[in-house]
Length: 169
Image (cartoon, rainbow, N blue to C red; front, side, top):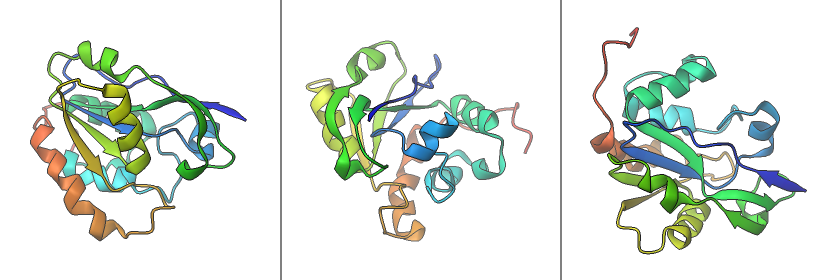
């Protein structure tokens, strides 16, 4: 079955772009990034952003990321994959990450959520000079615990815009 990624979530102030591989089945069914309740993405990113993202409605999560200069996308535009495991991804058509990066003048770094995203993203970016950060996957299939993953994710704080007056809390 051919599966397709979502459009990028970016704004003019995007300084950090976090790229996953390809949305899992739950995310595709709900048309939301990181929709599976066991995926640790929102919990890992909450300390980086300084807000409890998991407690927010989905649209508010995205708004909080954009407010802090954080964008989301995937390295895979379309691929065949039974289930949600990155190991099963086949017939990959990549997103044009370099073209998106060229539209983001303040972009300082691209972070890859997991090994598959990092491998494919490096290939797609080629010689593009943006800083690249490989993160441990937030997927529930990546069995390393949240506490072990958090320090790598916390390193993203360097690229996040400080809180704004629009924050309710």
